[in-house]
Amino acid sequence: MDGIKLYNIEDIVKELKEREPLKAAFHSDADGLASVCLLGSVFKLEESDQYPYSPEIFGDYSGSDVALDLGAPVAGEYEGIVIDHHPAHEEPVKYKLAYGHVPTGVMLFHLFKDMIPDDKVWLVCLSAVGDGQPEVIPPEVWLRSPYLWELQGNIYRDQYRNVRMYPYPLFSKLSSPINAMCRMGDVMGAYKILREAKSVRDIINNPVAGRARKKIDEEIKRVFSSSNPLQIEQIKHVAIVQFESDYYIAGRIATELSSSEPYITFVVVNTKRREVSIRGILTTYITERLKVRGYLAGGHAGYGGVSLLSEEEQPLGMFLNSIREIARTPF
Image (cartoon, rainbow, N blue to C red; front, side, top):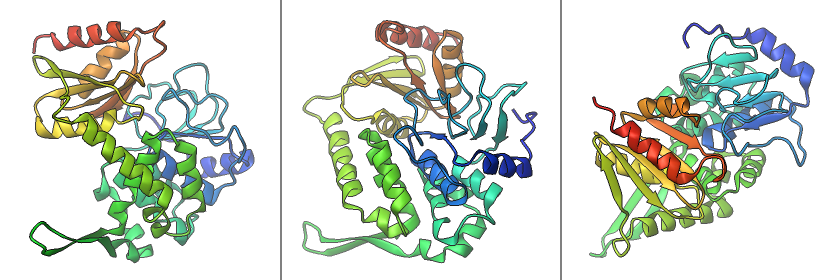
């Protein structure tokens, strides 16, 4: 990956300008949404029923001019521009690639920081925090938006009637409401809120996003309910956990499980949505072996996922058997 040559920045700007209005495709998470909105603050995007859009299958962004935070294309010859940080690109790269080791929104800041308006710089924080890497927020972002460290939170009485205050920096509160809307399946609703927002507080205090966050929290609580506990199937260092939900919360479930057992890699499957998230040390080990078996798997070190095709093409039972076989491999 380090051997892949980045597409020249000047050439990227020139080609993006020539292709305006841009047909953009983006990942359906906080980093992807921040990235498309950052791009839209510098270049003109096509705004229609078709574009911008977030593909159902990660890496399936045919028809777009630019793909953001979506990994390598999974099918066909792509001739657009890819700005990405997922380790899935293989030489020789035929498309125009700008690749980095930080969240895509942070990459866009490094590429176009002199072109991004000051009132949109906060989107870089959404990208980094949403990707779990607040430490990579560039110093220039703090300098251009010092208000991001202002605090906001809740005040309430505890059971002993003591007043408690829990304020947090504004930048740390950005990703939760946006990711909640994505987990509910309302990616374009989240996009609209971000595009229209004038400030950080427009996101944090948005009532629609706030209701989404509350619903997702309630659903997480339901899934972890002691009255109907989750079942775990463990094979050596890998554990399979299955559950049913209308919402795309496998990542949240997997992250909480992995935090409690750091030496177990969890494969969490939302059987209703055919959603698969993988968390733990062996994530890359598992995703690489799933690719050999024909699955669309990938992600970051420690954080991965699988885009399952239809039940006819890739039965869930067959997928689970593949995980079991991979887990049995001796170490």
